[in-house]
Length: 354
Image 1 (cartoon, helix red, strand yellow):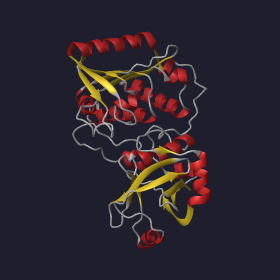
Image 2 (image 1 turned 135 degrees about the vertical axis):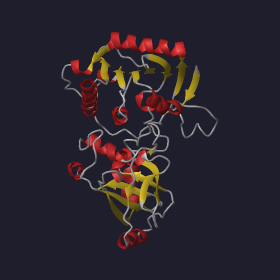
Image 3 (image 1 turned 90 degrees about the horizontal axis):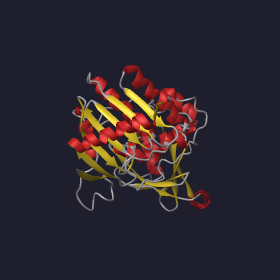
Image 4 (image 1 turned 45 degrees about the vertical axis):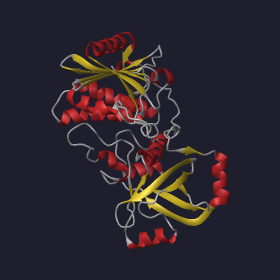
């Protein structure tokens, strides 16, 4: 038995410890089945489960995922979640790779995960991590989990299978769902690197702090970069470490005309961190990296922050489906094609999409 904690940016500076992240990628690579009983699933974690299946298919290996969702059906899915889970379950059942189940009547808020190899479970986890934290798509909270091995892991796996049998209803057997949770954007609400401003504070910024220094940076739809970094090569050639669904880098033109425009409004230079405040009240740091002046616009410390703000709004708007690329058609449906930066009197930058 081993106690694990999340690799949270604030906690990991205080003392040394191991996290779920130190084990999961390796276990995904060497196991052939993952059994999950969890309370909630995030949008990104649904994409990640699909990535796990694709990873094993690419290596001509069979991998089974059995997932029980204990809370989301009872408290209502968003329409986007529901559609993505329908697609995931269809893929799993069609190809014999597992099943998605939900608890229909009894709220299950536990979090248990077990890995099998040739029918034997030798690694299992129990703790506070919902699926998004467990498979590495979220680090907003400090999670605490226990790793069990051997007979203790087998006992956890048996308990998960008992929950499948007693609480689980196959997703394909559910009656049609017509009531959905609001898809209001909340992806950055608990992020330690993000500050939230009130509507009154944003109104005051708009009326009293805005200067005339402004520039629009186009949102580009390249196949494996910009807003579609997720579709690029994974972070490792030897184990399962895909790009995160919300990871983005916005490419800034290095043409002479574009550089002159940025210099004219005193836009930050390469490797110079600067603070942005969005029109819906989120404050976080960004920076430019690469190239001569800085061609890669990203959020500092976590590439997903800017990505969640951009792609998350596209999801909430209904323009972008989980796991699908951002295309010109998506931008057209979304109705916004650029990031607009306006310098504030404080020296910070007001950020909106236009």
